[in-house]
Length: 419
Image: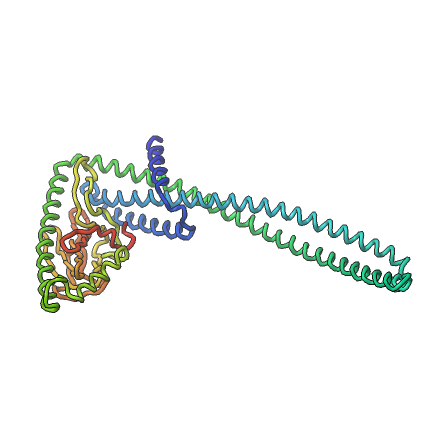
């Protein structure tokens, strides 16, 4: 129970900072569908790595990603329930207003009918003792006769209007009753939707707690192998530095070559890039936040920048890019038009490809197969190769980086919905 309360505190903390109350129901539905797809995909990845989960940090990283998606889904469900509650209250108020309006309209209609009945009865009584023509010609003078003609016309018109008012009022009352029936049907539908959402939220809350329990148990098991994992961490940092050093040398060489080419075309090196390279750089920059992912399917399991270790407190690493977990034999694709600058090998991490986009460079590391060669021109989403699966941990991850000159960028800010 304590764990549940702690999570609820966390949940509402997130909820208060969540600024999507202005979202429409359609937007929330779309967001919920995307989150459910992501949770389903992480479940697939977890099932594939479950056999080796006690040996691997990979399983833990995917598990953490799933927990975040489930927590986000809970927030989305809570917002949906809040919105549907507001809608139910609005519909209930609308039903009350419509019912009051029906009562008033029915009362007015009855009054109109009563008045009309009295009018008909009075006209019937007078009919026997008075003829309209005699009533007119029996006038004392022409002026009185004219007034009697006007009176009879007005009386006839009034009766006709009264009849039309009754018909219109009856029609309006029928429309209001139909509207009330629709409002009551909508209320039943909204209440059913609320019940479903509340049930879904309860199930998802239990699922999150279960997943968090699994994570805690796994962390306890992994923490017993501190020496092994610290050794792995050192190896990973060594390989990361090796990749970083290679990339800097290659990028330095690419920039030098670009300047030489620009000097030949422009007559000087004041621009540093050819007009074609400048145009490509501008197009790349204009697509920030809209670039396609380097994989058709995948989830980010390690983000850019300083990262706290999943198991050991106080241990931090720095990621030069992002790591994306995916399926075995997934195709790696280029995120934007460019040319293949280099293909090189990192021991234990597979092959890596550097693609030139003018002033920008993208890096795809962790490939077992390469489908391009140096100098090839490539178009956005074109196949570069196939991602490597590390058999010991059953880990299939692509390491992806974006550089602008010598400066590293956070890829999640460039890829579509990767934040």
